[in-house]
Image 1 (spheres, rainbow, N blue to C red):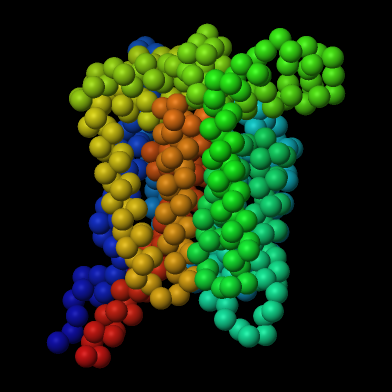
Image 2 (image 1 turned 45 degrees about the horizontal axis):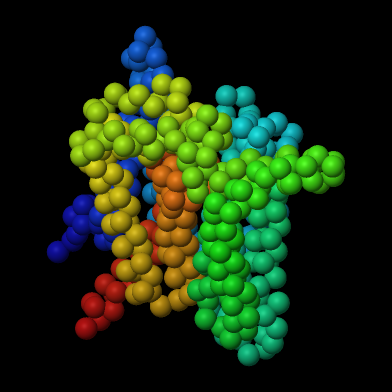
Length: 414
């Protein structure tokens, strides 16, 4: 008996349907909230909702097309044949961002007329692919030095990280990039990697300790003391360097105490917290946020979560966390099932890609950690982040599809 067309498609896909449904829910929910958060004047509300929704739905359509393309067509072996050239291309894109000027102090975008994209988002996907290609499933006895296997991953991690954080002045994206790469670096199980993996664990511990210290009251008193101010004024070179990076330190101080400079550096964070405090269980109603009317600089992007909480309350929180949690569980479940390290890295890399952005975004706007300016993926406004997120989710679904196909074939043999 021949298969029906529907059964053929279903058998060919063999992806996790629940994960796809959660992704679609998040992007549609995000589109609604972006339209709402973009209303900054009652007089043009209808026009803003229509134009913003159309633009975001175009990004969603492109993202979904990328998602399903990756599910069916992604092949890591093909990627491995040209990955060095692709990494060089990504590095070039990171370098040319300076030509297009800065937005909010960061040189992170390439603008081509009405279109713009962010190369650092592409770099985040490629660090996962780089580690999967060069470090995973390496058991050859002729490999005696770890440097033979980790050269490209470490070079990409360090060089791209430097370009994003220092050259582009985009600390948030750089921190997310380093975090994704660091987590993926810990997955391959080869004794040659152990010292490098221990080094990364130590670095993470030091970063956590440093963050806690920078958020402390003692550091605030030291940084704002008369002695420190006098030292900076007397040492002009050090003072100039400090003035360029001072806002980064002030983010730590604001997270440690949002009331520290409530009419200055802490003002926007305080507005975020005040907006969320109005949410309660059901919120003030869709479209009725007060904080988006000039109190949050980027209500539809970096600060979209406070708008969600203010307008929809705990219901809005559930609309974000429940689908995300389901996606996390699915990715971890399959990561524990698959046999090869390459597949594990791709799945855990996708998990870390989503989780780190969510942690940095929501942690920043709730004053749990310093603000980093990264988007809430699948929900915040943005074209490059949407397409790159969909791409890496499609890669994971490709891994899941191939795993399910192997399991089906093995079961049919019995």
